Length: 411
Image (cartoon, rainbow, N blue to C red; front, side):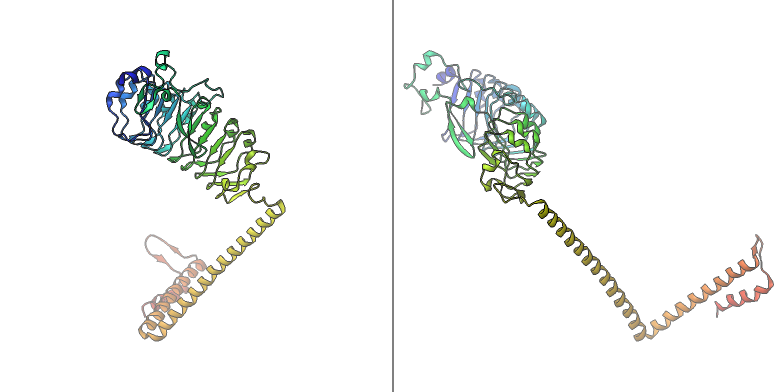
């Protein structure tokens, strides 16, 4: 049976209950073109020995329990990959730059993992997604010879007829639903990064992937505005940007996307009017729910200019009222504080005799000191009093006044 697998260049054990780790020995199958391990219970890390399988075109390990850091070696070693599906596992870490060396990849599904960090700027290196031409025929293994095709309906590999193995078939999540694709698989170009913890601004480089038919960036933590260059995605049929932190207006360039049949952008912070003359008006209101500042069909009509002006004036009036009220509260607080402090001091002086004597004594001494200082300064100004390095020379008419003032300090 293994000889047959080696000969046809394909391993398909999808939709079973296999568990455990993938053995490192699989890396010795250098002629393998396709790995289909989806929907099992495999765990652990994907063995790096698979980098020896340089002829791989399809790598599907969706819906398992694989974990560990994102396998960055895929981009360096497996340059012929056209299908990469790592959906619904527990891969962690950020997306490495070298992963985007996969110039042949046509279907990329990394959804429902624990991938973090921002989307690398080299996303547009996925050149197969950056052009509008489609591959002819099948997308996966095409090395089967006539002798093996003669085995159709005779040999069974892991419970699947060889006849079935020869048909290109993949389970893809499309428009929010999982479906099986066969004959039109070569026309599918999609990228799915949903349900991770990606951050940073919405990748403008994704808008350079003008061959995309489906794009899903939902349920992440990306922010920023939707790039106007999104109008370049003319062939796109399904676009999901929901449950991120996107804000700002929906670009008018959406008018260039005339094939869009599914659009989801709820629970973001989009604002302004939904652009006219596009298919955006054909979607139901739930496609925009949660964007409180968004208006226009299919949502409520946007307010007229007069209504907006009235609303702004009303807002300014409310703001002025709030400001006046805040100032009034401050003034009342100051007044209440002063009155409370004043009467607290007065009551203390009235009720406490020793405090009262100390209080008046303090102000009496302070007054006398200030009085003496004023008299001395007045005498200096009036008589041109000059102090030299030995002693002060004082005009006699003012001597008696100063002596009396100084003496009063010690009474």
